[in-house]
Length: 110
Image 1 (cartoon, rainbow, N blue to C red):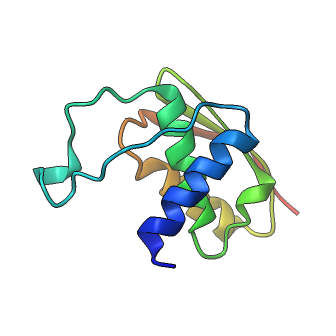
Image 2 (cartoon, rainbow, N blue to C red):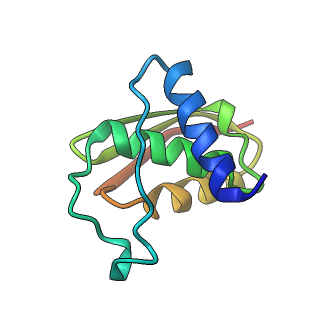
């Protein structure tokens, strides 16, 4: 399965698993410079995109991370295996459109 299709599948399954409405977003990267869209970015959309990004980030066990978003501020909590995994999780989160800041004070290492 290609990465784009698996990312969409994860977003759909993840949304249902977390009892949230699925978010179907069209990737405008090929159509719009800087991957910007006219669609508003909601906290639910950001949370879903962060969870999807974490699931595809090497060295990060996304099932060990809880993600919440309030007004574009993403809070990550959980226990990861290393400081490198924490740094990768924070970097992946910051890469998502609409993320204003990341609070990773709740991410610990085992």
